[in-house]
Image (cartoon, rainbow, N blue to C red):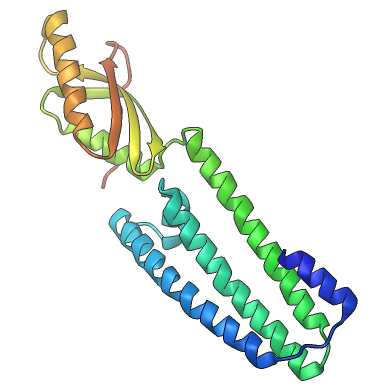
Length: 219
């Protein structure tokens, strides 16, 4: 709509009737979008500090599509409002509606790019995106911290929803229990892992004797 409005205004070159109303609308919109953006910024910042990563990486790596959408859309809206303000101001100063029209077109293109990025990122999570290395390493350390686990030779972790993980691992138990005891121990360990609210489902299997151990990176 913004692009269509800009093209229409560019072709018609109609003079503006009241710049004051335009500035008032932009100011009110900026305040409302700013409040929403600050809240999403603070939430994303807390997650970034907790994971020790940059803010932008947290926004695009988070498995929470709501946080990513609100942050990106509010940021784009604020940038769009700034572009619209410059367009209206230049229209008022020069008397040419071209600047206002170009501003509308730029805002529309900006929102379109943001929408495409969000669709692509959310699609990756819907298809089961593997977690980043930091999360993978944390899960591996948590597994090795269990007293019953001697080593881990295979680990796959992917997102199944907002802050929800699906975990598949091949582990070797400490000791030399019989098959029935091992099966029961595996099920018990899976239940323990699934008590963590971040783990939606855990599937464990035994490691083969020749499998290479997975060793977590130094924290």
